[in-house]
Length: 564
Ligand code: ATP
Ligand code: MG
Image (cartoon, rainbow, N blue to C red):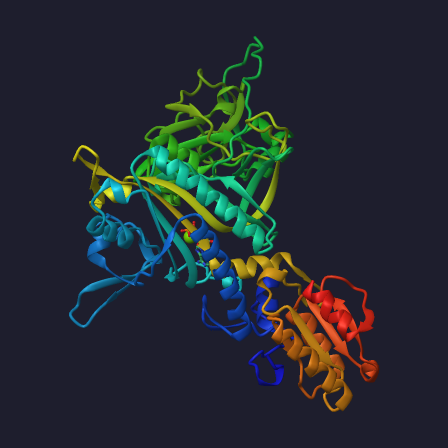
């Protein structure tokens, strides 16, 4: 590849609206260009990386016994109605109509299509288990597309779906996929962790793990124990808990306290002169339309996923201001568990174990002191409804919990029969009985991987590609394209690499050496050979992108070094 002929439009400065390091670098290195918000073109060098990631994914999927196919992006709404998702999917689903007014959706995922396909084509237990996958463009009208390829509205995903005859068979496939994912993310050069996630209402009785690339820009919080044996995302994370010993102290009667202007926990701490942990914070929600109040300690955060799971609900949303006023009879900010009527009351187990608390009085500008659980308020449910916090002890006894930020690059999920039941994916077993296939689904954000890798591999001068997915292995740079000896040696080397099947990029542009070096740093190919003043003696300068020191050696030695 000769740089003079390639479309690699590098930029000195990143556009002002690019926030993430990876987004800036990928624009500056001429790998991607935005067409619309969350919609990108992969330029030749970006596309090379994308293809390498795809190849790794294909190799590992095929090795794990999955078969590749390709499904359409355009999906009839009818199919989505059959699964029951057409109406609940919400505005992320891009909907359109054809000339006959028939409704379609652009696939954000393919459970419906694959399940109906298998329903039609697979009939016998002999054909199972079967795992099918594709690498295909997905469409999701994300609320906040951002950070370049990290959260796109049109993006490339690998999605796999398994169909088996029993939960044991699903366990095996799940394990195989989990291992394939571990190899894939290792090979693309990511520092990642597999974390337990919540199966929630999306379906399935099953286990689910997310593969998280560690990066500060990540939108997910992951919770890992000191020795690393416990890892979960924040929605799922549990903590060790022991009920504190009960003292027999007499708690005085609950009293109202006038607290004008104090409604946040900080303001209350100041007003009462005590720690956040002596307060109870009461948050009002609507869960599938029903009013629900959740009380956690003042220094804790409600975990909405745990609340939803405790209630077996599907949709949880914060109650709006008017709702809060109606339920508490007070302005927003004064809700409390005592005397709250008309809402189901969920009390976090830590609150239930408090001897007394300061809480909202359900009266504007008032709080109550000495509110005692069981005496002054009664829970409908008691349980763990809070987020884990740093320093909590791991539920498996493996030390204190620490938080990290992560980018979700992959997701494996035991679906069970949610789709196969609705869409009729069944088969005849050995005895000729009709049985429902048991499914798993497994996604990888192919395009998101590019951003995640760059987020982990860069320095102040540009990208530092891991070898397996670099757009090319070696960058050959004649310091001056006008110097005959330099160009001759550079071209010779370039041809040798080509003959050896090693991808080389020759910077044959008539540019100043400084400009070429800057671009080379930005592009981040793993090895660089500069052909300069000593070209006449057959000597070049060799440098790897990740190291700072250069070595002078013969062209032969440089060639051998890279071949090795
Ligand atoms: P997120 O929580 O980031 O929105 P998700 O749970 O919606 O992800 P899945 O439906 O499990 O994601 O999709 C499988 C994989 O596709 C994800 O693990 C992620 O790597 C990738 N992915 C999801 N949404 C996007 C997006 N908008 N842009 C790029 N990649 C995405
Ligand atoms: Mg999403």
